[in-house]
Length: 253
Ligand code: DC
Image 1 (cartoon, rainbow, N blue to C red):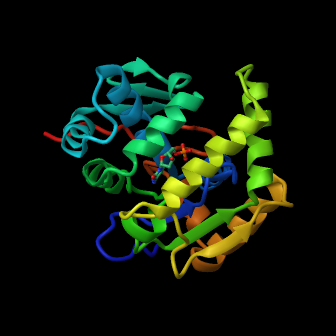
Image 2: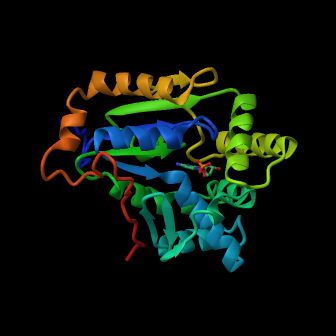
Image 3: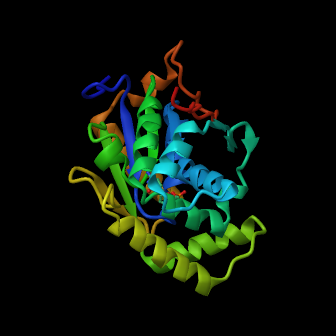
């Protein structure tokens, strides 16, 4: 199995703006392959939440870097634990999205999370979703996917998602928030959101999840024809086909 330059296991990266289905596709793909999955947006959300709770200014790079280095973030199935407490719902509010987007512009936070993200690459393989997985965190990834969609479609998807969860949602404010976060993600100096030069770009505007998954699987099988066998091997430390376990990320010692 190919695992390029220095990585202990092959990595598939899935990048793109919010509302393109990255998280769903990453989870489904990892389950199919029997690989680990890492939702890197949740890491930024945890840092933003911890900063807001502790009153750390969201533009204080040094303080935010120290904070990020000291957090323990664990994934247990669909649950996200921040220093042992379940924050799965707290990190998905509109406020938490805004806080995450702001701390994500801080170089010290990105440096702290870079190390944690790299450590998540473990056998039999990792599917990592985010904004800079293919460009900055795993430039040597075996397969790089970039999912895109029109702003309108992404706002509509987010609206439906929030409503389904019984959360408050208003289309005008979601439209404003998405435009602002897109701008911040794309224009920040460090690790801006952009497709890697060697990424497979898929516009999901008119596609359902199954069609996107089929396109992603086709791209993966071209480069890694034995990806599924690897995850199914006896003794593979992967997630197992049905498991949703993600690697635990401990603070810097
Ligand atoms: O994917 P998400 O909406 O959960 O991400 C939350 C925020 O974190 C979003 O504003 C972009 C930022 N982010 C980032 O800058 N880099 C990543 N690898 C993942 C997320």
